[in-house]
Image (cartoon, rainbow, N blue to C red; front, side):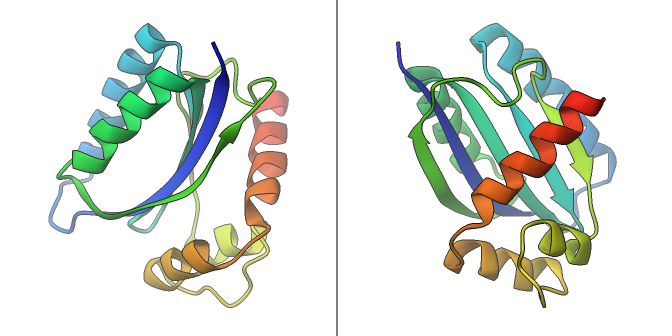
Length: 143
């Protein structure tokens, strides 16, 4: 079976309690392990940016579930492509919380000040997925 990775962004639904994010992570890790999906979730003041990787069929099924999840809105698929190896092989779901400004800087998206501005820039700017992979895959290796 072919490995792929996919990256999407969305906005966390306003009014959800902070522990909802922890519940999402816990359930994601449990489900991803069963489906042999790995990846990284970034949360930046209401913005989700997630990379998932695994067998194509499993990733596609997960993306369908994510798209229909009512805890976020504005689901925007950004990248979906074949890969030769996983970048986050030891993580059923890695997690990092960043300030939108810091995430924008990591991804080379200067001037993205808030979550909404960053959300829009992620959808229209090219070149940042490579920076995402380089930064967070390296961070995972360092522990």
